[in-house]
Length: 194
Image: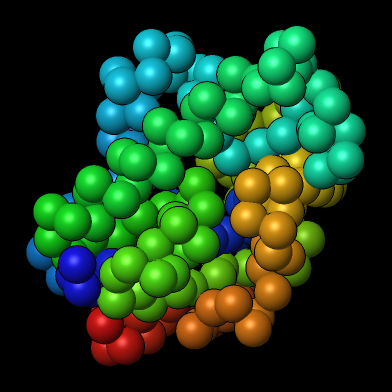
């Protein structure tokens, strides 16, 4: 399998999901983000909400705590089962043709089996905080705390299942600052690199 796949890893609030959707539209290829969650939920039997939360984030802030949480006597957790299903769904989608896959460790899962353009979208905390308040509204939790918590749990998940550092520029082809470049230029750069 050597379909050209764009994988988008992103900091919470950086606009990575939006970038992925716009890249796919311009390239006229599928984008798997929420659609990926639906497929994983269908195949795993878990609810969409469970897949959305547990398919990319640890329950706790660190990978070590995740290693011991919610395990059966055999040492397996629901999140481990979800990882297995998620991995297979991503591999299956990549075999079907060129596409964009947002998050869910797709960059790692496909690194040896597909022609991947691995992109990491990031931005400074203030710009991301402003974006999440505009998109998702205010909550009882302060925006900066929300960002730090989501990023910490996403990094811990990535580390636990890949043994690699999430956001490490040595593991991606492009690291784009959406706060400086803007969404449209990020999209344009990825499309040109495709």
